[in-house]
Image 1: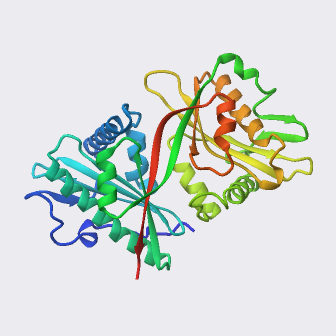
Image 2: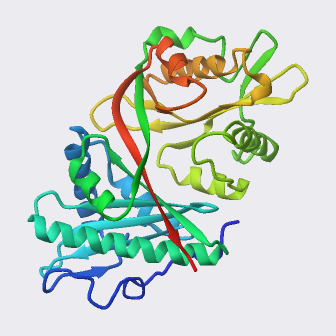
Image 3: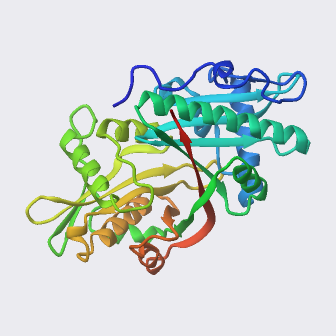
Length: 357
């Protein structure tokens, strides 16, 4: 359930030791989403973090606002570290993602000296530990997982994560596929088409533009069922699921699809988003693709992928991206590669279990 008040410590002073070990005059603070200079600075830090880790930057102000704006306040908390001149030099964000799982974003300026950077990093990790205990206690857990990440080539981030007691647990291939205009004809109609007894259709919308609740529940049920045996699967309520996905800057209701068998039972689902670009055509992104085990081998995943490719082409987009577990037992990467996807960059998951009590 989405709580009325978030489960985190909102005051950094309540989540940090009296002396967190920062340089003289430096201090922890809560970022103000209404302050344009703050959003600009956090965007600058995030883009520098991306350039250092993978060679190029893609984040924008919307990605920052997802973390710090009032829209996400029920499930997120943020902290920044400011230097003696009040300039933000580090940023941490936590997300109460699902039962037992807390996501942690950790960003430190790339240009400050090593000693100050290490102090900022230690402060962010201490703050995250306190937040893990707070959210774990609120959920009634004995242990709360912190799930953080890094780019595969970011050695500075790896060192900090390892020093803070995190274990590298998974590798993810971030894949992309180019889209050609003629691929709009890849399926008869992305809104609804049928192949070999499987119907592929968009989630239905009501008169007010909101999606049909039964369809939303069907998507959620399919994805919960399809990912039960996958790495680090965590049960998420329908309310949490919808709330979280609506926070994505690229969220669009007309990017949700269901695959149904002859009896009308949902067999697969795909949730897509828009990857906006300031320098060229937008792209589409596969946020979730799941097929129930009972329906595998019937071309459901292939049909859903063909649908989002055709939809992207019809919208004038030039690519479709997705993420795949490098160690996936389903061998999903073989399907993606056979359909034209290639790895663009690699990320890693790092976990730490925090005792709550």
